[in-house]
Structure formats: structure tokens, C-alpha cells
Image (spheres, rainbow, N blue to C red):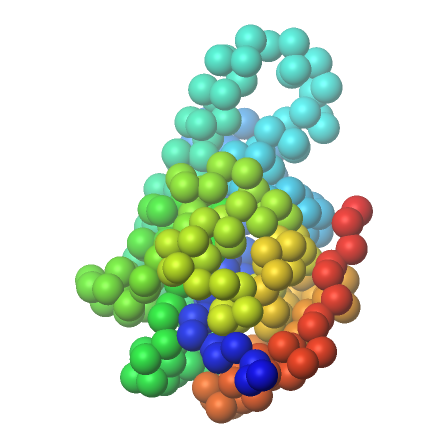
Length: 251
């Protein structure tokens, strides 16, 4: 019996499509300053906070680490403040992206173009917001960027963040594909765990923020996608079907 054919490439966004984290970090700091807070996240702290998926979740986690008593605020007041901070951060991030502060990582666009030319579907599975996705890909791919993707899962559709596989399961359902026909692309351990929990073979391209993560469950770990062709992906995908990748460990 022949192995399943690769039919879709499913990409994470932040860190995977583009090395966005330093720009995100700067946008958080700008939002804090605009809101009148003296919070400053440096690279080391932000690297730790990236263990928490989702911008709002990071703000809440950090706030509670500074003031454990913040839990005693009404849930509505806490949520409203976190939401407002995140709104300010999103505006700052979008402004930075539109100014050219972020570019797609090496090899990403060429690989997408080759996949589309050969009839594969493209999809996005991320925990970031629709606004952030649109800002990045509109700048990188043009106003009609959305037409390149058969399915998009994001923070608005999948509220349970990675490492939970919810967003990947939603995307697979939208594509009407079994996981054996897909290949995921991630940059972090949380993303890898989410993809593997959805039974997707996964290629990882770490950034400086995630270089020390555990990627033993990945199909391949590469510096970036430069020099990676669709032929490589077909070969690696076939290997994964003959010798399934291990699942990422829980922690």
C-alpha cells in the first residue's frame, strides 16, 4: 500500500513565517508606556514569556507574577485592562510591520509559490490575532494575500492556545484532510507539541528566542527554509509516513 501523498503545507506565523518576536516585544513595551505603566520586557524576559502562548495571556501572566493580588480584582476589570493593553500593542505592531520592520524568513515565499504552482494547499495555524496576520502578509504578499490560503486558524477561531492542538485540528477539518496528508511548520516547542498532538509531521525552524527548546519530536530542524524545495518536503513527508515522528513530550 502506497504512503499518503503530501497535499497541504500548514504554517505557524510568529517566528515561523517571519522572525517577529523582537518587534512584538518592542510593541508590548510601547503599549505599556502609553498606558502609563513602568513595565519593560527585555529580550531575556520576553524569551521566558514566550513559553506562554498568546499576547493577552503573556500580559496576564506577567502582571500576576508582579502582583499576585491582582487576582483579587474583579474578572471584568482585569480582562478589560489586559484587552486594552493588547489593543495598544497590536496598533504598535501593525505600525512597525507597515513601516517595513518585518520580512518573511528566508525561503518561505519561494516554497509557498512552488507549492501553489504544483497544486498543494497552503494554510495557517497560529495563536496570533487576525490583525497581526493580515499586517504581516499584506505587507509581504500584497493586498490579495488571503487568496493564497485555503484555511486560516488563529486566535479568533481557536481560543485554546498551543500546545493544545485545537487550531491544527480546526485547520485540518477546514481542509478536509487527514493529518497524514499535511506537513506543519513551527519554530517553538509549544507549536511543535500542538502540531504533533494533531498527528502532523513537523519541520521546525527555530529563532534566537526558541533555539534552546526541545525539538526531538520534529521531522527536521533547520536554520530556515532557504534551499528547501517541494521535492525535499515530499521526501521528508514520505519518510515520516514510513517511520512516524515521536510525539512531543508533555510538560
